[in-house]
Image 1 (cartoon, rainbow, N blue to C red):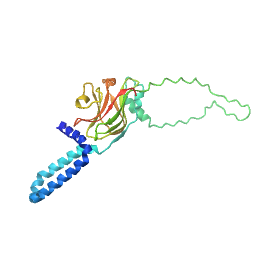
Image 2: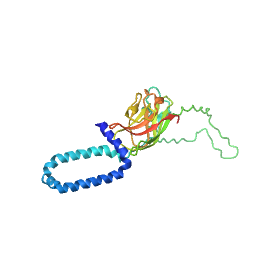
Image 3: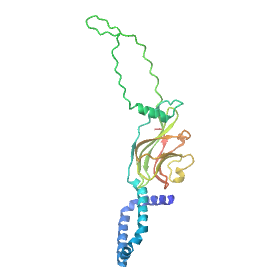
Image 4: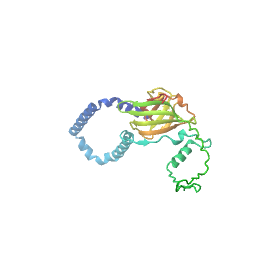
Length: 268
């Protein structure tokens, strides 16, 4: 059934450029059917048996409206998610801590304001006239600043593009390698057509064109798309060979439809 709806969605995308002629033809057919029914007296039959027809008709109509809204509303509703680049991704992670713990701690500390108000040291005297001597406390040498942690490196990147007339996409997909060897997929300036249960998938196939290519051996599902617009982060599991992934895909899981693809190239 899901595959059937997916085929309908792809058919709708193929017919989208002809939407206005199709709409005009549909209105003509609908008007002709209504006029034919009036002449045949169907409206009188429906009115006489309105209660009997309403008992099964109303629940069926309500179910159809619910299904149509559930599947169709994401196409008209946009959700923007703005995530900063993770604090912890460019830091050295202690072995006993997970990146999520460091991220939570650093994010919390970034919101703390700590005021420090120190008085002038007693050993310092302020000159009042001519040759008064200023005595300064002995100061230990300033510590040598430590080397900063290695910055994250962009190892792959690519631009999202339109899939067809209905499924449109733009923005950038970038795979970063952190100082600890972990990997992160970041979507920047994303703007893709919304849809039901969209997921972010990395696949080793270059520019996949169908379900089999998206789900090729070695692919990884990074989870549900957080929003169809904005800047977002998706950690890549350590078990995944991030350098072997060549496409980032926005994919509709229920109907197996590709919404947008970013073909990844080496480097940032």
